[in-house]
Length: 361
Image 1 (cartoon, helix red, strand yellow):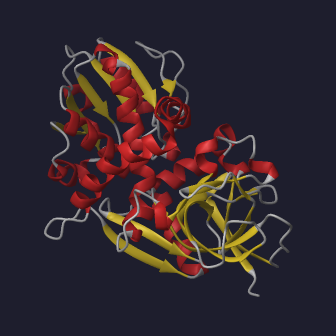
Image 2: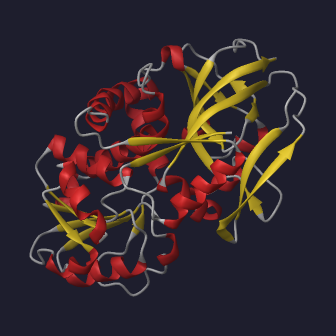
């Protein structure tokens, strides 16, 4: 049996990585061994690394201190199983380490999926412990797996952010201002807002990404960060902060006297994150997406949530993979060295906004 390979990140300096190799652990009763086929890497994973202590992301796949294993979304296959109801050869979608394999303890099995009930994950946010069987997953389509691994986790967040805004009446605002507008989670939110209609959507982005963001067609207006003060100061607004930059946040709050709500969502500008103390206007509130997902599961059931999200996902991914003007161009990175290089590229913030990165360890 091959050694287990993992990409580890130094939690005190998340640009620093190393590859760990270890002997596979023996299975216990009720456990299954999953060979991780491929996972997606985007700025979303860098946000996991940057907020891992506060939001418990480092606890899902423990590593020796000060190293952490950053989670990612993708596909795995059962290669060995002592869990009734989960058979060798079955393919599964879910939340994995950046690694070659993982041992799980599947519980609450249904035709749609199951929960990893391994002891150290039981008190962590439920949404990350839920796995879907590919054969029955309403959001899965053969031939779209790269796009699913890269875009689906971001779109799930995007969908829930937009649904959270709708559920709260957009806080009475007519304009949604979105930072890091070129990021996949941000433009997924903008896409959903455009589909629903009724509010104006303004994107803030780096100057070199302005043309790309405008071409997406999701935003009513796009401004480079240098022109934040060109925002309409008389508009009632909500700020959706995907960048996490304290400077950008300060300038938006200072310029918009009619800002009604400010949500902290992402951290694509990991080197610029800072305090929100002393800002004018509403206090920025961290939007913990699993909390809203839990609310909707309580109202609609898990299947109901996935069916609603699934219909919108098919529309979004169809647009993202448009043959004549794709929003996503996939790059594959196979092997430990290539995976490390890909992580460092995405962490640097210099990756092409249109690129999506697939990791194969």
